[in-house]
Image (cartoon, rainbow, N blue to C red; front, side, top):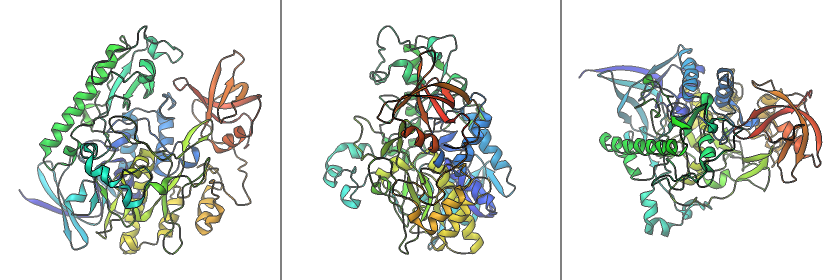
Length: 607
């Protein structure tokens, strides 16, 4: 078979969320880029894997970068809105996400996308990647590159290029992580051999039927008798009942994302096969995962008395095995590259109790190295009881949210290869930290930073490890279409008129960022209401604080709605209310929460 050769300055392997983000940003930064994906769809977690209820970075201060741009595109594209379920503040159809991503990719003349590629090999010479070899449409292609980016969910380039990586657990003795197991447990307990990575899920879609009470968010009906699901799902509905189990991942149009962690369709067996070089072994694992998820969906259909059936969400062109099965698994963890810096659990934890931020990452010269902000609480999926994790949550805006933390640029750069970056879950973290760093919103912005770094390396003709990080940070803050936050300012939302100024000022003077994440400059008041949002309406009633960080709005009818907000100004105002108070709010109703998502006080130009 003849090998065709070509060259692209930036080559991105993998259709993961971070891989697509990296390709987009590299091209937007004027680098000719080639994106190679194994399937026919883009986006990984956010579309192809069907995980359409994103976690993390839900608050307005963290809705920046490509994640924020994606979120606002969803608001404009989903006519029913995103307030659809109770696991997330956002729910959308996979086809909607895919259409947005493909439109973005196709709008860039210097970004080429090759789908349906099989990764054959990666050529290395000394400390540099020389080329990527793929098979596509029956032909073999050798693609030379200046910078290569692993944008896959499982770090698929790493073993081929012989780049050092980690897979599985690390002992507490290595880094002192409070939630990691001690070395003697790793050696003696079978659990750690049988569970090398977090459990993946093969998402299956259901469809709620509008003539059934379960499809009515006002209905509190449960079945007359507790549901009896068959093995291994006997306890799946024990905590919440069938109705709430189903509405957990509800999407527009009554679709239901079934990605249920409590005795549901997480897959725990034989996970070492996910990293076996034999494709047949991997296919066997994936067939078992699909069958398990379909069994779960069928059990819920039976126990919902006809309220739920399989839902058609994945068209044939997605590469899905069936319209109700995602086109790929939701891999929570894979190989993790050994980078110039490794993010560990302590670097994600709050410095104080309550509203706080994690310690900022400074380099040896005392400069801030951050290139992205995440805030997910930490969440590990294994069989059996929940793994005990160090707390990193606080009450904010009437709900629980996670402590914000920063990802340093050196965690994206291989410690072994001078032109290799990681843009998805395979960037350099510990196993314990991966539980908070693996989520879609943060990975969007990690990928964006990787793409910007690749383009900057080519423009300056400097190795990735020698890039001026401050210049990279400036490029991210000033990005014309998707400015990305790198400093965790709790009180400065993405739409704040001084957002760029404050981000930049904290780089020059980190003391302007308080330990509680507050801006300490003289211009602390925003004076500007959030932009209008689809589905917002005026809600009048009596605000009822519970004294413990929770709020309700009692309407004239007597109905009480839990009240939350993602906006810092409204959150701050709510925190100062100690007694019942008559209010008029701009808010969006989520009947499946159920809650009102408050935006601002009616008529306020800033609180």
